[in-house]
Length: 249
Image 1 (cartoon, rainbow, N blue to C red):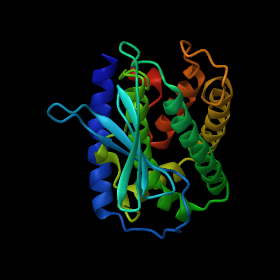
Image 2 (spheres, rainbow, N blue to C red):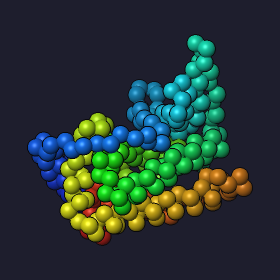
Image 3 (cartoon, helix red, strand yellow):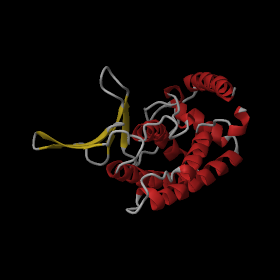
C-alpha cells in the first residue's frame, strides 16, 4: 500500500514537473567549482555485473566498484595500470578497506557541497543553487548505486534516495531546476527545513566517518550507517519535494 501511494504521487509529480518545465523560462545561473566527484552507474550487461565508476580530480584515474571487487585504474604514459581488490566469497555485503576509503573520500566532498549549499540557501543565492542542482541530483543516483552495490543490498539505502531521471536533467541550464527551486521558494518554512536537514546530514556524515569510514579500529561486521541513512533520506525528501514518510501510509 505505501509503495502504491508513493508511485501514484511520483507519477503526478513527474507530470507536473514536465509540464511546468516546458513553459518555464531558464533563470540565471552562477557557475562555481563543485567538489563532488563524478559517480556513474553501469547496469549489468550479459555476463558482466552492475558497477559504479568514480572519478575524483584526475581524469586519468578512476575507481570501479562492483559487488565482488574494486578496481583502481590509472592511465599513465599511454598505458593502463590496474590494481584489483577482490572480496572473499560470501562477504560481498561487507565494505572492504578500499571501499571504505573511497566512500569516505566521497563523503568529504559531499560535506563541502552541503556546507556551501546551506549557506547559499541562507543568502538567497538561487543562481548558485540552480547551477548546483543538475550536478547534485545526478550525484544522488550514483551514490545510491555505489552504496547498494558495495553492500550487495538494494535496501542499503532507501529506494527513494535514487530519484528517477524524469525529475532532473544533467544540463546546468535545465528548466527542471528552476521549477524545483520555485517550489522551495513558495514556502519559507520549506527552505528553513531544507537548511536544517543539510546541517543534520553533515553532522551525521561526520559521525559515520568517525565511527566507521575513518576508523582503523572499526568492527567490519557492524554497520554504523543507520543515523546517516535516516538523515540522508530526509534531506532527499525535502530536496525533491517528496512527501514525508507518514504521508505515504
